[in-house]
Amino acid sequence: MATQEINIAGAGIFGLSVAWALLRRGVRVRVSDPAPIATRTSGGIVGALSPHVPENWNDKKAFQFQSLVMAHAYWEDVARASDLPTGYARLGRLQPLADDKAVELARGRAVTAQELWRGEAVWQVIAADGTAWEPPSPTGMLVRDTLSAHIHPRLAITALSRAIEAGGGVFGPPVEAPTVWAIGSADPLVTGVKGQAALFEFDARGMPQIFADSVHIIPHLDGTTAVGSTSERVWENDGPDALLDGVIARARAAVPSLETARVIERWAGVRPRAKSRAPMLGPHPDKPGDFIANGGFKIGFGMAPLVGDVMADLIVEGRDVIPEAFRA
Image 1 (tube, rainbow, N blue to C red):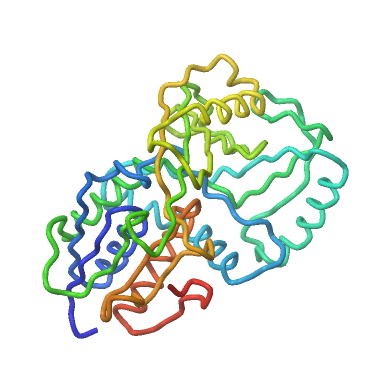
Image 2: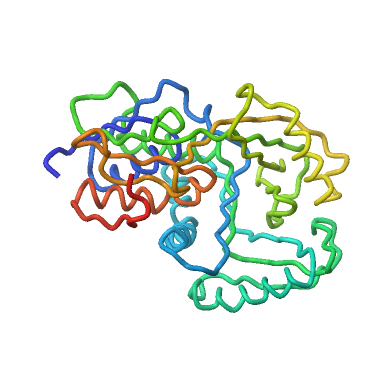
């Protein structure tokens, strides 16, 4: 690359992950964002790092798998460089199985996971043992996978920004240099999808996350439990509203331990979704000489470690290993 300085427009998870990867390769980075760190969508409260099901394998699933495997070392490095917690923990996930057909399907996926996940993690069907944290299951059976992890988005974004500063990155106005556009739902190339979540005063740290009745239930390491989220294409306002009440009710039904837990925060944000649902990475289609990293939607934190790497490969070395499905 002729220049050794890059602007990053957007201090969400994709922008910061690209900045961190470039910085570690000796590139000077300047990050600009009109909003304070961790106040927009990447500063949410859920943080479910969960894989796609291990079947019908494609480039998107393979990319996400590789990034999830990288995540432990990645967030350890960020925590070490920033001297701040990220809330990352790979503690797996439980999912109840509704009927015999679901059990059969899950057992088939356990077989394909042995090949596709290459021994890095397991997907298995287990019998519920009646512990308080387990979700009720009509069949008495659960899916347990060991690839799922969770992170505290606000803590992670704050730590990543601090690590960038500690490494010499600058947060301020852009300079005359190529730009990586990572501006989230403000980008006309993506569609904004509203999501709502809630935070409970309930300490279940050390337990696996739960996915039940379309709700993610995340026991954070700070002693809170997050639940979410909605996916709204149309909405009347950007703040939390009555739709969140349904998420909270389903979470309480899925984990009876939450029945009397106090809700300490109601959150809403607008997430960037590309038309293909895959992230948009690579040269910017409308800005010659610039780049794009956007469209993380629901899986931005899970994709971030590898997103940073492949964007740095392209920008620094001219080596393009970005999946075709991720082209802008």
